[in-house]
Image 1 (tube, helix red, strand yellow):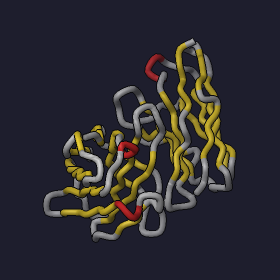
Image 2 (cartoon, rainbow over the protein chains, first blue to last red):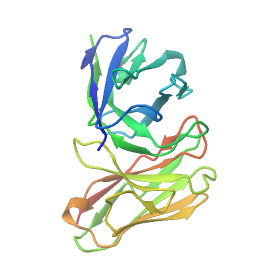
Image 3 (tube, rainbow over the protein chains, first blue to last red):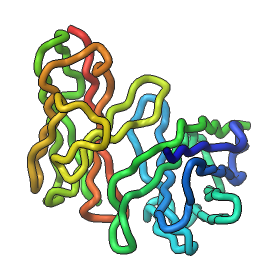
Image 4 (cartoon, chains in turn green, brown):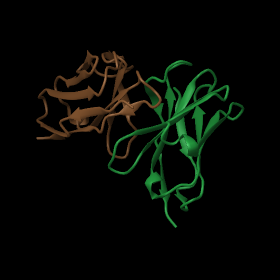
Amino acid sequence: QVQLQESGPGLVKPSETLSLTCTVSGGSISSYYWSWIRQPAGKGLEWIGRIYTSGSTNYNPSLKSRVTMSVDTSKNQFSLKLSSVTAADTAVYYCARDQGGAVAVSWFDPWGQGTLVTVSS
Amino acid sequence: EIVMTQSPATLSVSPGERATLSCRASQSVSSNLAWYQQKPGQAPRLLIYGASTRATGIPARFSGSGSGTEFTLTISSLQSEDFAVYYCQQYNNWPPVTFGQGTKVEIK
């Protein structure tokens, strides 16, 4: 079955750019939407945005000015960049497959195991 | 942005008992609601989508109901592996999709 694995630096300095990659295995990345979701320690879940394999994106308006997503179908990977980070961006970051289509985000399944990113100098 | 409110924050239940979790939306989300289970140190796992459809491999003791603004997740007979945090998520009005703050089901 499809599995997702996040990778990237676990520590990012304030004002710098957080960069994460999600590698999809056990299936093709093509023809699906793929989302990033984050969870600060002890708190709830926040949807960051999603990308289609064509490169089409939808972002959370609250983060839109700082978020860039990209996809590399040859590597079965998609990526997240979040600029100008602060301590408030410290969280576990998950990638997940979005079961929705072009006109609607839907539910998320499966999810990666998550990766903790800490913003600190 | 639609606000999802879950209650109670913590639910204490004995094994074998029934658990009823609530999720309320700040405006109608039709049946566009999902439920997830999250155990410590793990990613959320999809339980229910479309308000009442169980995801693949989810036991029948989990059931979802509701539409509009009021939703319920029922676990008919709690097993030891069911003690976890449960989140609801609406995907009717976006961006963004939004999640509730979670209900922790703990052993009584």
